[in-house]
Structures are given as structure tokens and as C-alpha cells.
Amino acid sequence: MRTLVTCLAVLSAIGTGAQAGVTEAVVRKPYRVQGNSAAEVRADLKAKGPDGWDGYTYWHVDWRYVYKPADAGCGIREVATQLTITFTMPSLETDNSVLKAAFDDYLTRLQVHEDGHAENGREAARRIDAGIAALTAATCEELGRVANAFGHRIVAETAAADKTYDAATGHGRTQGAVFPKPLEVGSIGPQSPDIAEADASSSCAAPAYEGNECSSSTTGF
Image (tube, rainbow, N blue to C red; front, side, top):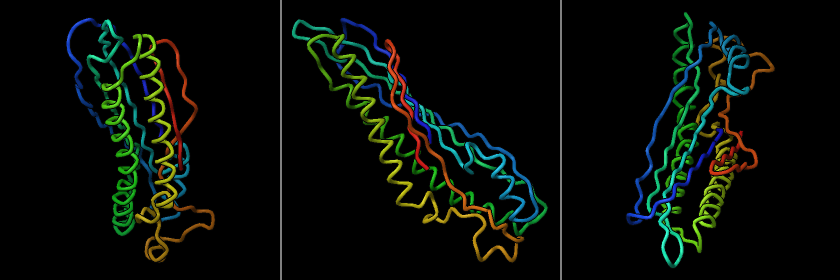
């Protein structure tokens, strides 16, 4: 799962501190795979899957906050946080009804795993929204730096949580996100020796900051 954060600060001299809350949008991007055997489908997944994975979850956090300057320092008048979650998942076209049923079961289980990554994104957005609303500093300029650093820290912690989640679930294997399952191979076609079990994807790089906009990414497999 790749995460991206953007933030924007605005100066305001009126109003009282308040959270606008987190607004969420979910986008689904299916990609088509084909095959009439498990080996054919697995090969197509390998060829077409995003970044080499069967499923991919991308969440983007955008926060905007309004300063509340005062004689004693600077606070936050309002925070508005937008979370966008994008799922990229396969859709199978096949004439093999047994294969289709097995693949649909796999997709259900893979989505469960991907939903775990999405929930980490939701938790990050909630923490950023609530945390920035409570911040104060001697000056608004300092507050902007503190707020953005806080957001990046939450992103880094969430990246670690995503990696822990992947390690604990075997990238979804313990949740049943495996295709094909060993016992299914005989009924839905032979499995090639180099066919790997399916994984969900995540991503992470060091945060970057420029002016009033900042971004950060993280990756785990």
C-alpha cells in the first residue's frame, strides 16, 4: 500500500478551534485477467498485477488547517482532513466455473487483507486530524512546522504498522488469501513450479517537504 500526505496551512485571525473531521472517498480500479486453468490465471496475474502484486491499496491523506493567531502564540482554528483510498484488484474472465468460484473466494479473502491496510490509513487520518487540532506554538510559522512534522510522524508510524500487519498475516496468507490453494490444483488445473502465492501490496519512502505542501510514502509487502 502506498500512502501520500499533502498539507496546506492558511492564516486566520477569527473563529475558535474546531475539527471538520475526516472525509473519505473510496476508488476501485479493477484490472482484467484471463485463463482457464490456475496456472494460466496465475501467469496473467504476474504479468498484469500492480507492481508485481495481485492487489494494491493506495491511500492518500490531504490535511488543511487554519491558524488562529493570538497575543500568547498561535493555535489551530480548524482542521479538514481528506482520505482517499484506492483499491486495485483483479477481475477474472474464464469459461471454467470451478476456477471462477475458487478465484472469487480468493478475491474475498484478499479484499479482507487489503481492508486491513485501508483501516491503517483511516487510523492515520483520524490521528492526524485530532492531533493537529490540539497543537499550539509560539508563532504560526513554528506551528506549521510542528503540525507537518506531527503528520509525517503519524505516517511513519503507520508505515511500521503496515509492515507489522503484513508480517503477522504473511501478506494475507493467514487470512486465506492464497491462489490457487494446494487442494484446488487438481480440480482447476496444474500449478506451475514458479507460481507464487498472491500477496497484497504496500509502499514507503522518506518524507519530502516543500513550502506549505508535504508528502510522504511508505511500502510494505
